[in-house]
Structure formats: C-alpha cells, structure tokens
Length: 267
Image (cartoon, rainbow, N blue to C red; front, side, top):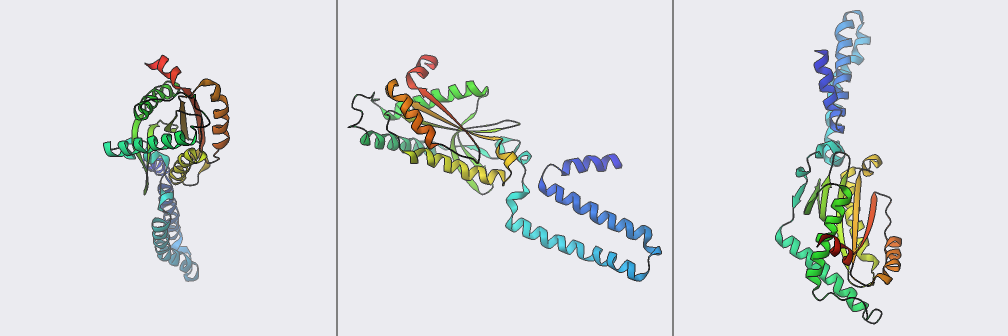
C-alpha cells in the first residue's frame, strides 16, 4: 500500500493542481489520524479544535479552489500537460495561409514604395508572392537543418484561451520552438514589422508559461530574415534589425540568409 501511495504521489506532483490535491490529502489525513488515535486521551476542550478543523477545512478548501479555478485557472497547468504537441498545435486552413501571405505581400510592397528613391539599383523580384513563398520554403529547410528536427509548418498554437498563428512550430522534450520567416527584397526596414512578431509571441508565451522564468527559458522564437537585395547593404540592414529586436521574456534567435545562398543550397 505504501508503494502504491508513493507512486500516486509522484504522479500528482507533475502539475500545480496535483500538488494542491496531495497537500490536502496529507493535511486532512494526518488530522484524522491524530483524532482517531488520541481522541480518547484528549479532554473535550482539546478535541474541539480538531473537530472544528475537520469540519471547516473542506469548506475552506472548496472556497479557495473555486476562486483558483475561476480567477487563476491558467496557473493550474504545467508544461507536462502539453507533452503531446497535437494538444495545442493545429494546421492553419488554406484561407488563413492565404491571408497571411497577402499580409506579407502588402508589407513588402509598402517597403518598396518607401525605398524607391533610396535604392533604385536594388534587386527587385518580379513576382513578390512567388519570391516570398520560395524564401519561406528555403528558410524552413535552413532552420530545420540547424535544429536537427523537422517542424510543423503553418500552424495555429493554442495556449488556454489564446490562439496565435506561426509559420512553424517544433516541440521537443526540453524546448518549444516558434518559427517566423520574413522576406525583404529591399534594405528598407520598418521596426514595427518585427515588433509585431515579438509582441504576438510575447503574449502567447506569457500565457503559456504562467510567470515561471525557468519555463520561459525553454521557449525559443526563431526569426529567419531572408533578404533579396544586394549583399553590400546586408551588414547595415542586419545591424538595424538586431538593434530593433530585444526581448527579456524569452530567447529570440535571429538568422539572416541571402536568397541567392539559399537557392544555391536548396534548389
């Protein structure tokens, strides 16, 4: 029986709710044991506090549990509850993928309009939509090669009541990797484009990790920046991007690729 209790206790310690349950069982069990074994040796005044404890303790726990479930339910989950990534990762629909692609095309076109006077000799990709899709596909291959594992592409990631879309997600035993790819055909750069990605990932990760810094450390955001302009402008562009991307909440890993290098390697 002791071995069964030990095994059950180990399983309860895997998440906060189980720890609370184990604590309640131990406290209430010891109180009942004390009253049962020593009740006949206690006078009425000594037994009364124990009796009131046994009566009021379940009521207090019920009230506390109700408040915890209704007000702080996110803190009842642990990372082990999401060991199977299928529980919170689902593919994007074709419509969602199409909408995301259109948003990226509009972003690139807006940069193109701003930078015409500044960079007339920059390499211009004739078809932005096709070029972005190629850049994204090859960046996926480069990141997969670096990580050493394939990842789910174009997915929705759920964290309690929040749903976010990412270009890719990989969940391992120790880390969760979020992947976002951005393509720039000109060295013009608007800070808010990448800040939007950081903000979106920050909101998701904050809810996912429930204020636990050790758990946040296990989540990585990969930002793959693919450029299609001349190489001479790449160092300056890279410095601008690096100075704009900073986040203390989680690990952000920037990777810069020139589209010509990716084509040589993966086409």
